[in-house]
Length: 268
Image 1 (cartoon, rainbow, N blue to C red):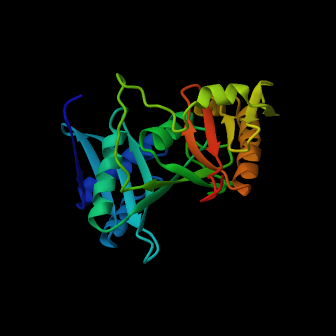
Image 2: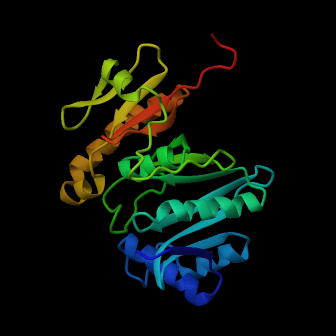
């Protein structure tokens, strides 16, 4: 890979190329993209941004962001896709764009069963999972999500927080110190569809750990019924935990979320 360059795109050809990229990633015909070029062009015209990452002349990633409600200093990332090793740079470009315009946070959603995305969002970027959305989009007919229910986890990224990227030579650490030891000692509360433990909860009610399948995209293609059982099992843990005030703060390399209940200010 050559040095990647990232820029915002405004022209018809550049935006069309981004629309084609999203079609390829979500396995839809280019004639029926998940994010049509005319929609992306309108978002740019309304004050949003389409960032494109180029490996030489080749488009290697893209992301789209808009501003949220007036007065919230919040931005929303509608979609992002990138080659391995490019995603972090794309998100940092979005971050810089938003900060230059006075934003303090950025939100987006992702499929909570995709563990690699959870690790990227929660550990590498340092965002927090703040909302669990059940079947957020309803039925989806693209080649990636077809046949499943579209639960999503909203993450909120503090754009002003220090940026500390991890690299392959310096593994990123869990956002919760002592995560593995605490998890192993915590009582199990739920079983997964594979009959192993799905969730554990510590006796202090500060942390819950919840496991996801190794590769839900492959599982969904091979056994959609089993993938849906995983969806419902993880949903039960998350909705129960979020109703009690927990947020998602980490994802281990072996596929376990850490859900944390923030301490009350001034509590012992």
